[in-house]
Structure formats: structure tokens, C-alpha cells
Length: 249
Image (tube, rainbow, N blue to C red; front, side, top):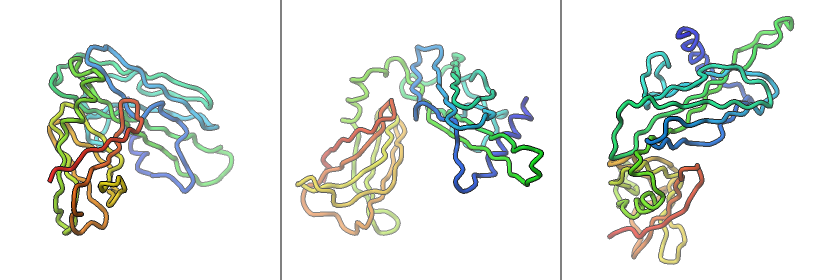
């Protein structure tokens, strides 16, 4: 089984031909795993017209690690299976009880590799075996931190500042003293009238107790007066939520 899993991962390196796309869809862009739960489920759907061979595994941050060399406190079942077109499959994510930090979230990743079927062998045509990989975040959240009020209050504790970067421009610095992962997909500086002055083309994530920087496009000097940071983050359900806060002097 280990050799087979390794071969499937190697297939992902072939890339995708123009116009090709994955058929198997994950219902959700992230998983929040409360520490007091024994298991969660991930729902998959094959929206294509052909069957596919599916392999799933977890990793702890290295996207290039081979599944047979990764150790995480989760077991996925089934780890490999066939999916017929227009069919669904539920993957169980089981937590084995290995102790994890209780003062902050821990981040893992759910991986899905879809191997498309071979063309008809009688066609006599050359072909390239295609594989498509999808990877989504899994946040293991301690029970004591799993409340909507605590999560909302965490955004009031975020620390923002304006920094010069190595290219002579500016970036907004986000320092995250909270126990949560803060995922941003958009950020802009706005003036007193609420109009965006400079925007960042970068998304990013600030891990608990760490920071992230978002470069502002075309900004060579700070604007005069007071201005605010407008940002969009992803919530537990993958939905985008907009907030704003005044940038300190």
C-alpha cells in the first residue's frame, strides 16, 4: 500500500494539461476540528463524467512530504477509493488523542489526490496520466477556545502597523497575539471618507502569536491624516467577512 500511495503522489507532479480540471470537489474550504470531538467528516462529490481513483491523507505543513512518511494525530478512512461520476463519498477524520496545545489552535492540512482514468487502450493514442491535488486547512481548536464570542473578540486584539519594506515601499504589518489563525484574502488602506487609497494584492495568514505583512501596491509615502485598514478574512465556514480598524499613528 505504501508504494502505491507514493506512486500516486508522484503523479501529481505531472501537472495538468490546458483546459483540464479536477472533477472531485470538497464541500468546504476548511475544517474546524473541536478538541472535544472524536471525529469529523469531509464530504466529496464527483462532478465529472468519468470515475476516478482518490487518495486522501493529512500533513502538518510540508506539502511535498510523502504520505507514508507523515505522522499526524489523525486517521482518514477510507484512505483510497474509487469514485464514480455523480456520486458522493464521506471521508471520516479520526483524532487519535495525541496531546496537542490547549492554549492555541494547531494547523494541519487535508490532501486529496484524484487520478483520472486511462483512455481506452484500444485507441492506440499516446496519453499522459493526469492527477489533480487539492489541499485545505484543518484547524484543531481546543474546547476552551471554541466559542463564537471569543473568536469575534480576538479581532479587537489584533495589532496593525505601517512598515517600510525592502523595496522602498510600504506594507501593513499584522501582529496576532490571539490563539487563532487569522486568514486574510484582501486588505486596503482607506481615508477618512472610506475610499480605498492603497490596496494589497496579497492574501496571507497570521498564525497564533506570529505576524504577517501585506505589501501595498504603489505606495511610496504614507498618506496624510488618519486612515483605516479595511480587511477581509475567512470565517470557520470559508465565508468572507469584512472589517475595518483605525491604523495607529
